[in-house]
Image 1 (cartoon, one colour):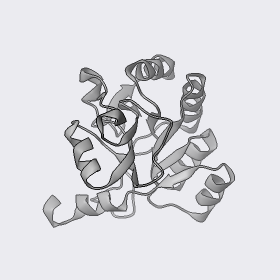
Image 2 (spheres, helix red, strand yellow):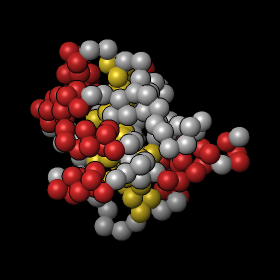
Image 3 (cartoon, one colour):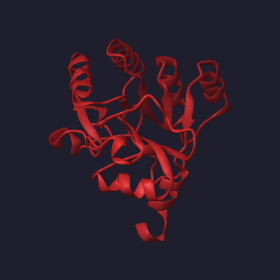
Image 4 (cartoon, helix red, strand yellow):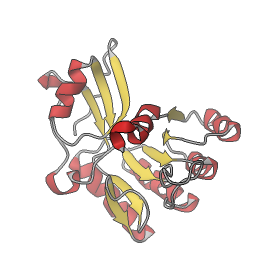
Length: 201
């Protein structure tokens, strides 16, 4: 997707969506959203990042294209598996060439619906996250990190990501670290509520 450096001064901003079709931009525009961040979707690997721009009358879009996740870990719906750290530079370059304006990395699994209070397995290690951040920076890109649970949030923040996505089971210790490094938090409470609501059963 395309991105614009000039963000509208009026209107709503949605900092975490997953766009599957360009029609999603029409829905966002009708809801008064003027700018959004697309956190990626797996099918964009094969068909290319959606390339509709704000000049078409839709919202300004900052897209990750698709996410990077550790081999065998959570994230196959949203991105590609990274079997070894050696693959990271090439995948980040491929994302940049496809039009990504930010890199999405999975630092943890998801909130468990079967075991309340727990997070499912998955996520890059702290060292891998730091490598991803460094390689993204070399391409002029920041990193948004899917991270749940204190350990994953702290690992992502220590690595220098730009934002923590979801951040369930956030702690004051993690928040203090994020604040000291000017990392912002994008909680997605509405999405979790919908996933666990009556319509999801």
